[in-house]
Image (cartoon, rainbow, N blue to C red):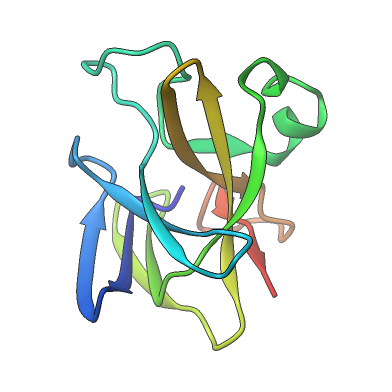
Length: 135
């Protein structure tokens, strides 16, 4: 489910994990500039947006995110970390021109970004969910 990411922001390399309550993800705005947004919401954090850091593509298509005015965004990262079904972490590099798809959700003054996930198409995959990689 993409438990960590590695990216560059203001010429600094940053590695962050969702488990960190202050985790931020880079989001590319329409003008091309990068801004950092809070990555999802943890159980202990206040707010009304969904708990977790991911949005299943099927739930987006079914309209479950509509009440939070979802906006699709690009999350430009160098690599991301996934845990396989046995709990082992693996890092995957993204090639140039690719990014993770994100969803920015809003509730009044609260705004957070969620990584869009899909179910692997391959039978017997090592992962239950995978970030949606776009180009």
